[in-house]
Image 1 (cartoon, rainbow, N blue to C red):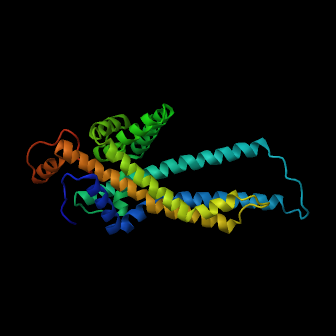
Image 2 (image 1 turned 45 degrees about the horizontal axis):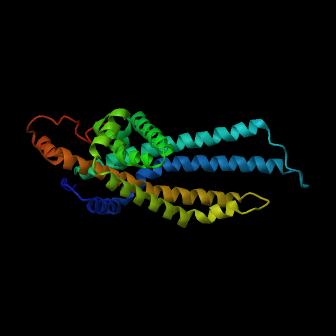
Length: 291
């Protein structure tokens, strides 16, 4: 493993290093994100198959029939499934993001890294990452209600809250406070990273998912064939796995960059490796022991 390259970076250097790291460790990051999104993919395909089976059973009578009235229980079941998908997506995305952050930390600090080891470090910290994401979502949502601009500012200022929570083993409120402190004066850099990841996500959705979205939106007497529904979920899975690591890598590198700039983390890390001096006031990032 190469020695850690701890130095202040411009935004351009952060982004350049993001894509170089993503390219050089492509299978690592794709492997990390594949595991949680594969669970979501299997769940969505299972729900689609069950729905198709029920529709086929209702229409098995032969002669065309008037559409049956929708039972209230069916409506509540649909709402429950939708909520379950949202909750499952929230949990799996958080776990994948946390594992990616630990992987970036190990690479950045020149330590051995692997898919299993990255997920192992997430154990015991799942509630932390979900708490941070949820609390940040509430803050940003409230800010968006207040004329949008405050929400964008809060999103930028809390952009490294998840890395701070994972790498410093902090609770949601403390991690958000750390992010607000580190990103002071760098909100525009954070905004540009958000903008880049958003553009990449939109591009992936247009290239891979738009054809199926248009087919689903076209008036038709029948629902999409099951095969096309599965293919739609496959393209969604591919776009998620390919794009999701980019933002996690960029914000993790930005977290370290801000610590180097504002807290001389490069010197702290060097002294820690050499066994010189006292430990830094904040826990050394990336040193969370596997459970």
